[in-house]
Length: 300
Image 1 (tube, rainbow, N blue to C red):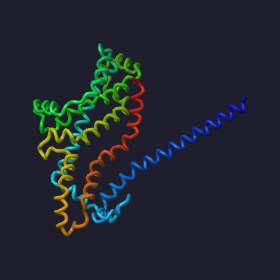
Image 2: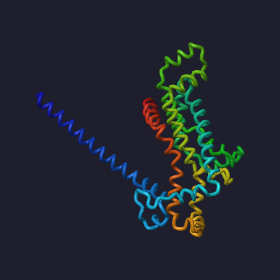
Image 3: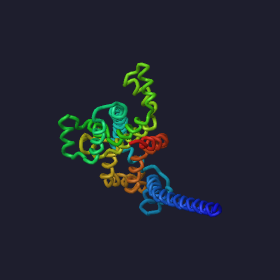
Image 4: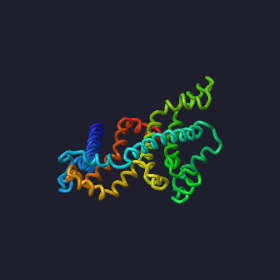
C-alpha cells in the first residue's frame, strides 16, 4: 500500500511539474507576442523614413537616426505640453492621495455609524458613470474651464483606490493605534506619523495608479481645455498626428531631412514619447505595486 501511495505521489508531482512547464512556455509566448510589437515601434521611431517606407524594419533600427524624435520635440508647444503634463500629474497625485487617505482612514479605523452602508454605496457607484454634458456644465458653473483643476478634480478620488487603501488600513494592528492614543497622539498625528509610514507599499501603488490616470488623461483635456498653451502632452501628440501630412511636406522640402523622416517614423516617435515617462518610473515602484495590491486585497 505504501508503494502504491508513493507511486501516486510521484505521478502527481510529475503531472504538476509538466503543467507548470507548459504554463511557463505559454507565458513566454504571450510575453513575446506583447513585446515584439513594442520593439517594432521602438525600432521604427529610431529608423530612417526610407527604411520605414520600404518595410525593412524589424525589432532593430535600420539606418539609426533621431530625426523623427527631433521633429516631435521641435514642434510648437511641445515643451509647454510636457511641462503641463508633469505639473498636472504631480499636483493631481498629491491632491488625490490627500483626499483618498483622509477618506479611507476613518472608513477603516473609526466606528462610524453607517460605515458599511457607505462602503457599499461607494462600490455600487462604480457601476454608474457621469455623462459628458453634466460634467462639462459642472466645471463651467465652477468656473474651472481652461484650468488644471478641471483635469485634477475628476480623479480626486477613485473608488477602487480608496477601497485599496481602506483594506490595507484595516489590516494594520490595532495595538499600534491604541499605543499611539495612550501616548496622547490625536487622529491626525496617528495617521501621518504611524499609519502612512506603515502603509508605504499600498500608498506607492495608489500613487502610481493615479499618476498613470493623470498622465494618460485625454478625454477631459479635450473637453475642458481649449487654450493650446494649457493642453497636455497626450493632446499635443494627437494634434501632431493630425497634422502629420503638413509636417511631412515641410520636412520633404528641406534637403537636410528629406528621406530621413516618414509618417510612420513620426507616429512611432509619438507613441514612444507618450509612454516613456511612465515606463521610466515603473521599475522603481514595481516592488511596491505588487506588494500593495496583494496585501491590500487580503481583506474585504
